Image 1 (cartoon, rainbow, N blue to C red):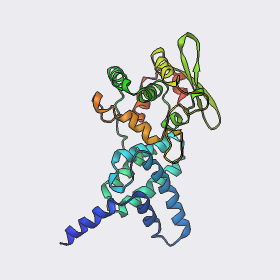
Image 2: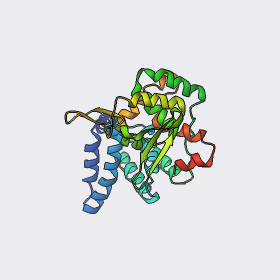
Image 3: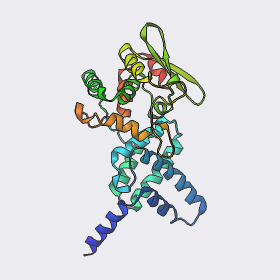
Length: 270
């Protein structure tokens, strides 16, 4: 009876909203500074999780943790910050009885910060899979444009979100260039002819400073920039159709990196 009730209690815990779990966890500490520190790190994770469609603790999978820590790395967060976020997240999961996921968080974290744990190998898309992906996604012009831009430039989901229609630039020989705006600099990357045609066709219905990728705003009339979750959904929905259930924007980026052969291409990633 005790074990059964304990199991019911644990199930109730993992089914609670992620934000509530974070608040409850942080409130256990008497020190205001400790509460603030944990809350800051865990709210950063909560924003990421919500963006990929995770609202409850019980929805969390190892893949979500892996993607989150990749996101931290790609954003250029310091080693100390990543270590602190790993510790905060594993502490929350451990408190909620999710020990296996807490351990996985620590193991993946060691790989990200150069520890002894081995990084989970990834398998970039083959040329045949890339071709098939573009074929099956032609029923969704927005998704197809996102796919060819990431495959052709290696940019992150965050950079896709910031693109405006005016960032699609016509160049010579029917080539389209994409302008990406960083915090301190701008860079322009040319697409190949096939990707140029796809992006030109999609972008033709959008103008000026309108978001290149948009969705209906949930809080006001008109459009808003495409959310991280929507970008993931646009890409991931085609994974099963090409036999790659692991398909994600990050896998597209890794495929670009794997195909990069020259130092000039590698410099684009820095």
